[in-house]
Image (cartoon, rainbow, N blue to C red; front, side, top):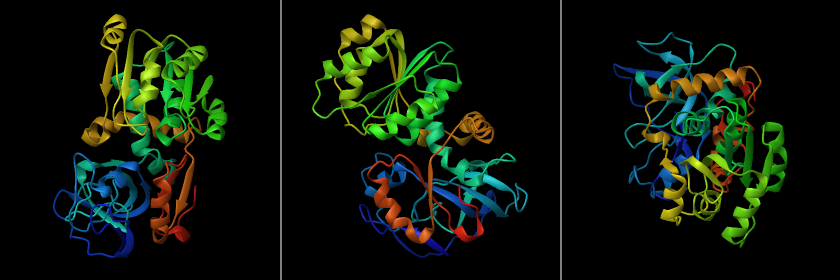
Length: 330
């Protein structure tokens, strides 16, 4: 079976033949139709991820949409969404076929494009659950999205808008992507500037919208320090990433004075059953054309190139389509 292979921590992936373990009771064999490449996949492969490190060669990949080949729980030929937990003994989804636990599978609704459904999976959950379940987004809230030009951030802008936010502000570095956020539901954008003082950034955010009720943060570090200065009383802040840096300084008086709630979210530690509501809502909005996911598709053989592109924080999802000539591209 052709698959991506990471030979050791920090190694770049290669494409080669691997042996797929036989399906066991409680598992389903899938033909992979579309497998997104996620930042999580690169982080685990680097050997620096706090929850997983693989010293031996393994097949990466954390999610896919596939067609059921063998199963005791799902109809043969059915299209499903699946999560895979890649390790040296359990190949991940960046391959032609994958074996996953039945509990890690959800049926795909009729009418949803498999490639788009795969692309919105992890990224959509990382936007929806922090906003809706953790921050308890309410109609009328003012929402600030830190890192709005990334895949999670773009989805967060759309979700906040669709769920009734009175004002959505996107903060990010790429001016071209920022310019397009208004079409996704952003009411204002703030471009990050290299070397800018925290107070100056806070003032520009405040000028776009203040006070802020909800912050979804994919950046951490200095952008979060600035954004916290613009919070309303009882604001809710949820961190889902730290691409701007792993540390931030938060004044205790600010937290207590405005009674701000700061939480963290990690999809890896959330069961698929707890993601079902989010995914089904996202797939429904996708099918209705109310949510957009920019996608770049590529064959499995080109995975090493996409891997390098993902490391630069692209503004579109890279989705591996193992048999591109047999599937419609998004």
